[in-house]
Amino acid sequence: MNHTQREVHALTELLETIADHKYVLGDRLVEVGVSGPNIEATLAAIAMAQGELGHARLLYNWCFDLRGIRGKKAEIYGQTGKAFTSIVNVNNWITLIAALYATNLAIDIVWQSFLQANHPAVTSRIQKLIREQQDHLIYAKSWAYELRHEQGAIPSRFAQALNHTVNEVYVWLTEIEKKEELQTEGYLPMNINLANQFKEHLKEVAAESLVQMN
Amino acid sequence: MVATKRKTFDIFARIKRGDPLTHIGTVEAENEHLAKVYASFTYDEEDWSEMTVVDRSQIVWVKKPNWLFAQKEGRVR
Image (cartoon, rainbow over all chains, first blue to last red; front, top):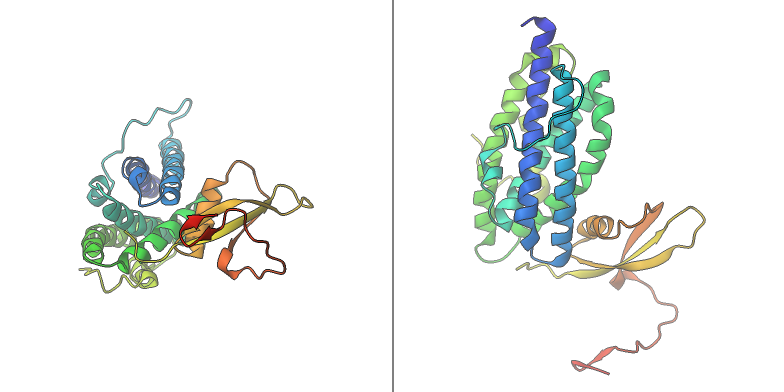
C-alpha cells in the first residue's frame, strides 16, 4: 500500500465506522423509538431513523467510491461490524437516548474537525449531512438532559447506559487522533484533541459527573 | 415518566415568502429545543420557507374570547 492509498484507506475506514454507527442507530430508533414516552418523541424518533439510515447509505456509497467501485452500488444488508456494542445492545428508551446522544455528539465533533481542516474532497460531501444531523443532536441532548434530571432510578440507569457508550466513544476518538495519515493528508487538522472536546461537550447536559472515562 | 412539565407550543408557518403566517398546529414538548425538533419532524408536509414555535403561555392576548369548549371544574361546558 503506497503513501496515498494508506491515507485514503484511513479515511474510508473512518467513514465506514460512522456509517455503521448510523445504520445501527437507525435500526434501533425504529425498534425502540416506536415505544417512546409520548407521541411527539415517537414520531421524531421514526423520522430520525429515516435520516440516520439515509446518512449511512450515503456514507457507504462514498466508501465504495473511495475503494474505486464504480457502477451500480451494492445494496446494504447490514453493518460491517464496526458499530459500538452499546448501540447494538440498545433495548429500551434509556439506553437508546444514551447511545444516540453520545454517538451523535462524537460524530458531530469528527465532522466539525473535518470542516476545520477544509479538505476539498471531504467538505462538500458532508455539509448537508451535518446540517441534517443538528436536529438529531438537539433531540438527543434534550432527552439526555431530561433523563439526567428525572426522578427515581432513571438518572442512575441513564448514567450506567451513558458510561457504556462513552467509554467506547472515548476509545474510538483517541484512535482517530492517533491516525497520522488523516492529519498528514489534511483530512483532519494537526494535533486535534477530539476526546477532550467530547468531555467538554458532556457538560452541556451536566453529564460529565455521570461518566468515568479512563 | 418525565418529571419536567410539558408545555404547549403553537406552530406558525408560511409556505412562500409573502404568504400569510398561518397557525398550522401545536406540539407538546418539555422545552423549546424539543418543540423545534418536534415541529420540524411532525409538520413536514410542506417545504416551509418560515416556521416558528411559540410557547402558548408566553402569548400576550389583546382580545381573548371565551373558548367554546373550555374546561370548568373538570367538566366540559
